[in-house]
Amino acid sequence: MVMPMQKTTLLAPILLATLAFAGCHGAEDDINLADTGVIKLAFLPKDTDQDPEKDPQRLAAWIEEQTGIKTEIYPIDSDGAAIEALRFDRAHAAFFDGAAAWIGWKSYGLEAIAADQKGDGRTYYNAQAWIRADSPIQDFADLKGTDSCHTGLLKSAGMFMPMGYLIKEGHAEVVGDPDDINSLVGTVDAFFGTPTIPEKGQEFAGYDGALKCISVGHGDVAFIRDSTWDDYCGKTDAPDWCLDKSAYRQLPAFGQVPSHPVMVSPHLDATSRDLLRGALLALNDSPEGQSILEEVLETPGITGVTTEEHLGTWSENLEHVPGVKAHFMAKHKISTA
Image (cartoon, rainbow, N blue to C red; front, side, top):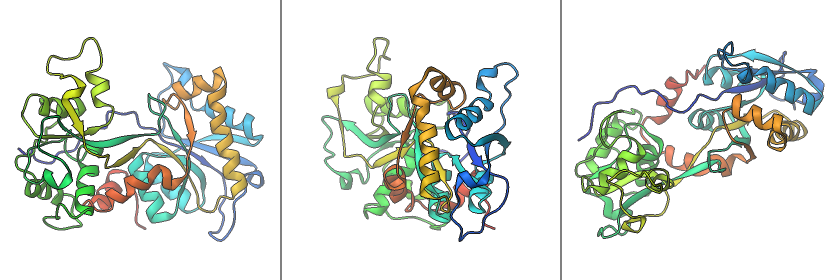
């Protein structure tokens, strides 16, 4: 049963940092960090009174040491503010949520130079459809009319990636206004038999809930990340509903859901991009750097990436989700002006 659309709260920590400089460059200029004289590291403000280890000044000091360029903290209040800073060359780079990064790339030409790592060291997870091993489902076309288990409403692996893929490949058709995110519910209803889209806290909510949904026979297919069974069932205290891993099959991945990338202005020159990337990657190589990663950036590591490899399959599917761009722009306070 499809539940009514409600606002949700992100469980993952909000990671947002911008490398900015005082002054303004024209869009036709190549920006070189060495010429700016100061790097301003903008951060979504945190309360660090109780835990000074989380103070972003530590990251500013690190970048200054690595680059030889004075680095300061500059507070920002949203992903939208960070995108605006990059658009108008008041900033060099920013850590973004994957959705905001996609808007920044497609709408304003921002580019990725690095990304934070997830717990397993990857900068992404694969979005997949899981089914029972004895299911008659063989390919994506067979999903039509089946009972689907989603992690929740407007979730990346649980809804955006599978629905974007099914629409892109011609298996599903958008029902309603293609520019309205609310049309996604009608599209899900029209394609599947009885979809389960739980609210937070309900049985079958989240990755584990969606896997449970097919494990107990409530649904035919679960849209989850590739590591879900290992995360919840591959341990000694696994819940009773877990089946042996061989009891499940996976269809090919829809694509990769990205971690938080570091996006840069399209006007930042190659030398400066390499300088910033090098300073960030150096965090991986020392105890102090590791402490900054864990305490300030809340990630185990940083990896160098390109825009296409990090955001490519995410973008290919998102582009087909009705109303998703307007939804993300409103959610992240991104201005169209």
